[in-house]
Length: 500
Ligand code: FES
View 1 (cartoon, rainbow, N blue to C red):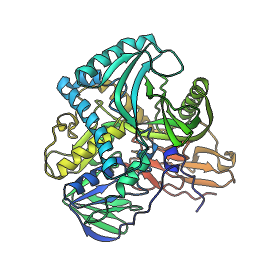
View 2: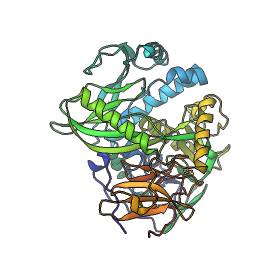
View 3: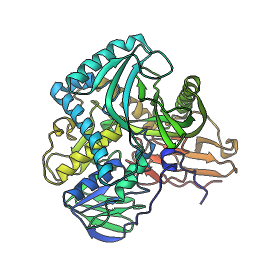
View 4: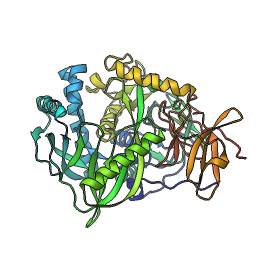
């Protein structure tokens, strides 16, 4: 087996990786949880707090897939969202979103404090600013709506960044933290008393009361799918939420920043800092979203954030580059709850629109309530069975047209015709004997080749240069160079291709 690329995310390389066992044999618990990110681990912890037994099955390592790739802002300030939610869902439901996010932030703080999890929580204000006077009106409107919904929002032009802004919205009492340390630390509190966390346990078969891996089975009253997007075709969410990727970089910065920041306009620049050790502070910067697997756009937006960071801040060279990925639900609100009407489906949470730390914790709180047979009033907004495009339809249709084109053509940024034409370090989709082949030639000249046809629904995958993975533009599945699934909705690896 050729060497696989090392994990390139800042968070994962700066957190311990305790081992959890692999599932083997048959066990019975109250609730089974698929997925060991912030949603699955928090849900399991909250279920244990309610006296229920639970088992988490993570296909790879806890906390290191989607959660470990985020920017990890603990904030209810989600760019321009409250005026949009109010317009689409009305004031009462927009207020539910605001209340849920603020409660989610407090829940992270309280769980970390209760269990003594050292996850570098730092209180900071969150700023949304603009350098474009055309956005001033939207920021002023967002401030007015946010205040009315009860959020700690105010307008300012003093934000502590080394450039003048036309307007900014500040949310107080927000925070930033280390996501991998938090999730791994929380996971360590779960085993015992009939509760379990399993790693390297990929689910290969599932029913609403049973999950199976290659080596074991869990029977439960209910199954929580905390897998970024529900597996396979559960709930049809692959057709109701579209994936996008964001470039993220980390570099040493001379001074910590006074807050967490994101601008309103494009290209997008999100920045926060993390004190790795005394006097050793890193800036974490995320950029403009693009369709997963679109290598040219990925390069463009990495170059943009690297030059933006260098032009505006006193930093060292970029040491980490990775691609974050999330889903946007068709109407802008996450899907959380039962996947079908009644309580005989799956419990799901997806479509966090890149704000997965607070939304993920909100999802866990709702899912734990539902799994325990309790009601949760936030469901009035997040209900995962709302299936019709209530609003935001035009954008969603555009995305789906884009998706449909990939069912046929895939995405080719360069056109080498054979393995021999690949340069060391280069990847491409090749057409060999009528088959699409995803091929990467490593620095030693070894070719890693698998089928380019996504095992979910047959789109052609594209190259993620930063992480050296194959990412599907249609519904966001990600695969290792050897075709192994990193995360779904696909559950089967890419097909094999014999190099020649
Ligand atoms: Fe659905 Fe690839 S993730 S076709």
